[in-house]
Image (cartoon, rainbow, N blue to C red; front, side, top):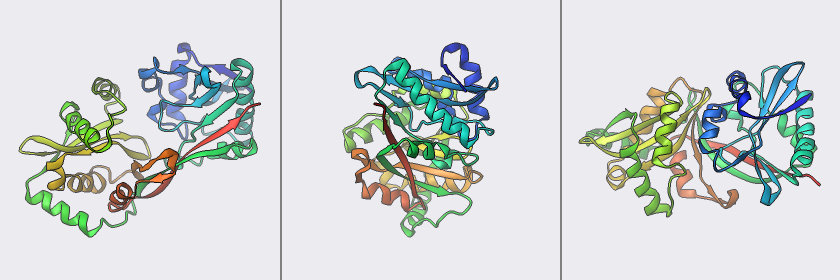
Length: 314
C-alpha cells in the first residue's frame, strides 16, 4: 500500500473517490475543503493499492501542537473508504498513516473525528476498530439529535399546537438562494443568546451556496414578506443536517420553527433516511444544553454521537 500526499494535481481523483465512496459527503470535496485553506495547513493523504485509490484522509497539521487533525475545518473527518476497501486494508491504512505522519511531520499526536454512522451508505466503522487497536482515547463525545424519517416519532403536543398557530398567523415557508435576510436574523440571535457569531461569514456562505446549490439549501419562514426564522441545511445522500437554525422574537412568538420543520421533515425531505438537528453540547461534550436538546427531541430527534479520538505517537 502506498501513501500519496495530497496536492492540487490529485483534485479530480480525490473528488471522484469522495463521490464513489461509501461514507463520504460533499464536505470532503476539495471545493468545500479549500474555501478556508488559508486557515489550515493541509496534510491530507490518499491510499493507493494495485494502482487504485482505496481511501482518503482529509487532514491538517498544526506544528505548534505537533498534531495532525482530521480535520479542524470540518464537522467530522476520518477515513473515506471505497466500497471495496476491506477491514485488513483499513487496518493497514491506519498503521501506515501513523508511520507517515511520524516520519514526514514528526507528529506526536493524531486527533481523529470519525464520520458518524448515519452518513454512510454502507457499514464503514472499520476505522473505529483500528483506532482501538492503537489505544486511541475518546476525548470528546457530542450528542446530536436525529430523526429516522421513514419511522419518525410523533411531534410533541406543543409542536402541533405551534404549527397550527403559525398557520393561523399566516406564516409561510420559502426556499431562498440569497442568505442575507436570514443572516441578519442569525447574527441577531447568536449575539443576543450566545454572545457568538456564525462560523461562516455571509460572503463565505454565499460562495458555498453557489458552489453547492443542491447540497446547501436555505429555507426561511416569512410573515408579510419579512424573514423571521430559517435554517441552512447541508444535504448529503443519507442525511439532511441543520447547519444553522435561527428565529427572532417575532418568529418565536408565532411558532415559526414548528411550521418550518414540519414542512421539511414531513414533506420536502420525507424521502431521506435521516434528518439531523446537530449537537447540543459545550465543554467537549461534558455539558448538555438540556433546553436546546429538549427542543430537538420534541420534533422526534434522538441521540447520535459525534466523537473525537486521540492517538499519541511517541
